[in-house]
Amino acid sequence: MQPKGSQAIAITSLAVPERGISTRSSAFCGKGSAYRSTRLPRHRTAQMAGLSIPDNNGILGDIRVLDLSEDMAGPFCTKLLAGLGAEVLKVERPGVGDIARRTGPFVQDMPHLEQSARFLYLNTGKKSITLDIESPMGVEIVQRLLQECDILVESAPPGTLDRLGLGYTAVAQQCPRLVYTSVTPFGQTGPYRDYQGAELIAQATGGLMHTIGLPEREPLHIGGNAAAYTTGMSAFSATLLALYARDMAGHGQHVDVSAMETMAVAQIHASIQHQFGHQPVRRASTLVRAQDGWVHHGLERGAREDTWTRVCALMGRPELAEDPRFNTRDARREHQAELLALLSEWTMTCPKEDIYHALQGLRSVAGYVATVADLRTSQQLLAREFFQLLDHPSAGPATYPGAPFTIRGSTWCHTRAPLLGEHNVEVYCDRL
Image (cartoon, rainbow, N blue to C red; front, side):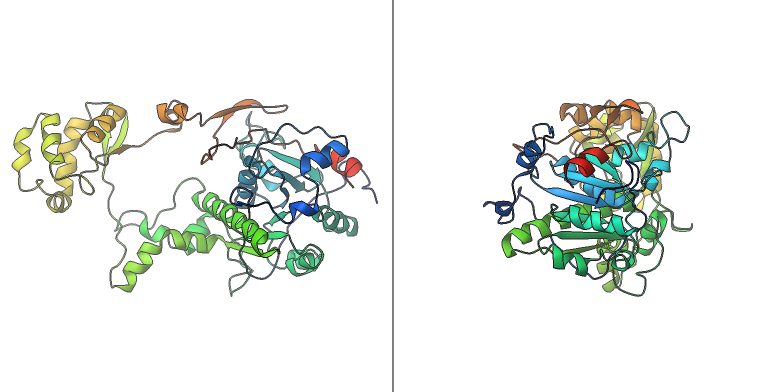
């Protein structure tokens, strides 16, 4: 059965039921996978099919992933799997692709399916095919592709894939060793399972926003997409664990990742405090203005007792070392407003990085607020070769954030995001 055209295949919304957890990765396996013994490694099957695949020494180099997820959390999970060397086949809707392709900002501030900064970042290292998975042919093709896959990642509303015959229960009968990862706002069960979610909703329902902002004002939303990326990282970790469990137990599992639960875990200290009768406290910022930005002095917590005396000397105010308002950590917390005013007189005359290095040299847990421009020139990130230059045939060259971790002896796979349906011919003509 052949698709009707190179753009004849796409993914809409997907989903799955049930709750589970699993993870497996050749990175964590001392012995070889039993599953790998039943299938030729990817580079060998590629050679037999006449395909050209670059050398891959990633720890997931013989793992195949079918990516049915969209937007951010699921694609971030599969981006990390691709970074470790897995072959990630992204299934997209014909003609329109992943919703992230239509989300700005765009390279030239003009909407373009191949120039969304979000899509370009979240889908590095992947291959793209277009497929209408809601059609009978699309369902059959997904089922055939899954026969060669180790992992499926999806982000559809719970029950969507079940109705298509692609839910976990149905798929597990045909592919018992498959790790099936579902990434949704509230999980596959519970009274909220069918509710819609978004970044703000995850931060709010997970309790994060309750701890952010000024005490007398409304709670605040953290900028960026902290919930989506944290949820994607949780999905990545759980998927690797399920992959490892598969090698140990011989069968796959259903990994059920909830954005709400991910955020709630991030606030577990507040939950424990509440049980002991303490309400989470929202406090005013302890940042002070520097000559070119903002710094955190770190003198209220974590600093050694003699640090304050040395900071006073650094500021040219040695007499403050014995001031009872500031000579202990508790006193500095109690007189925080006065402390910030005093420190500001000094910090406003100095660059933020100079203050940071000076206070760190005195063993204060200090920091500075880095801008995006600061990150691009950070000596720490440059020393670790964090940023990677990738060239894209439509968007052009750009510098991308690299891996969030390194593993000795394994190379992170840095390749550009795919064009929509770029690998249709490879998959539909050479594999199926």
